[in-house]
Figure (spheres, chains in turn green, cyan, orange, brown):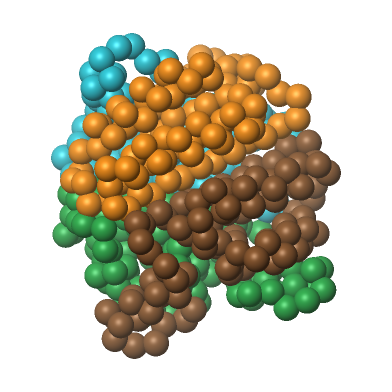
Length: 101
Length: 101
Length: 101
Length: 101
């Protein structure tokens, strides 16, 4: 399963890198495959493990804040493995040229 | 905590009421406070209970489908209770007139 | 077309009702059908009108802030009219009982 | 401004690469900076240009489908340029090691 999430603490200024850093430290140490983008973090893995990891990140940010907005988008395709790279490659194949990724 | 979610099975036609019906049956029986809108379902409750309920709904839809897209938006404000109705009322108070809700 | 959106100014504290109030004042005066929920605002109408309205709201909030996060979810079904109420009713019909809405 | 979007046609099977390919062809030819990920496409540019491009993509997919779900997340920070790469680098700097990206 693939899931992308982003966590926004409210009332903590406009620069949130410290909080995103805390989240990515947790994600990077989790052992699950992931990718950090400028708009969120994508994780691939078993449904329960992925959701537990996101919950852990959400709670870590909430510990230091009074209000947190977390967005999660799940793409759950039966039998899909390695979708994080396969999906992008299959789009490039259809377009017929290299894309920015 | 408030969370809004929506679940889209892919490859199952354009009318999804059957799947949404299955989800709402689960939500309605859960005992958690909720509200069905035309764009999703809002649930209020403890973080773990809310997330478990959404996971249950996601899995129920996935049982009959090969690919499911689930969007979750969490608004977690410390100490907030009854936010499902309070938030709307406080906006109406600021605007100074009745709003459609 | 249906679209749900929410706008979060960052660095403006944890209570955002003033900003949401400003947005809803614009939406309410737009003439488009809408519904305010605790998690966002749903608008129904022509694609271009709906998107222009959301852009107007986004810019109104950005005027007073340095960073704004706006989420938009579009459900565009050909020929659908009155979907804001029809979708909810059709789910109730399938579940076979009144739901919270 | 940064915006991430994803477009899901309903009733068109579980493999959507053909539609995503059509979208990416439009994005790649637009001249705006972008990045394709496994969960969406991130675009950086002026608000109006970015939103017009997303609208164009949405309509291109809808032409061949009866129902389309489009998600857009906007991160609009005044004066931010090159945020697509800067945001990721600043997180790496805080975590203090290379991250998957």
